Length: 169
Image (cartoon, rainbow, N blue to C red):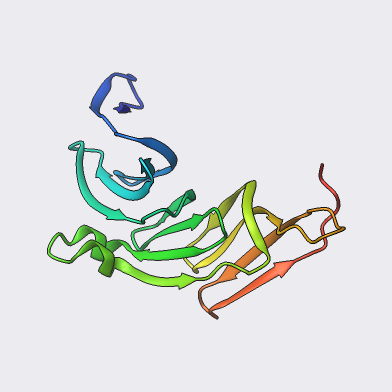
């Protein structure tokens, strides 16, 4: 259950139930974007927090969302547990006449040496530069796994894997 409260009086303004397991969420300017899992499927859903109404929903199949961001009034950015980053057009999301999957602008594939997200977060700004947390490299026989930082730049369409990092655990 999500509850929207007044910042002045802290009284509840709206509440709405969310089915499934929420893996990530982000709020900005009256919109709440949620990554949730129902059964074996993952969904992205956008809610209008002023009305409590769901205004967009897209099925991502078995992909697990680990972080989300709404960037100003332009984009929704999601990253899954294998480092694949997706950029969604917020204006298309808010246009109810357009099919949900047509809001996807860019998909920057995961690096083949990433196996799973182990923590950290995502930072995004209007310049479309996104940095996101720590990923564990796929195990190589005889070597320990080590965290790395992946940075993605939408402006140039590049991704960079920076390593080695000091042992953090």
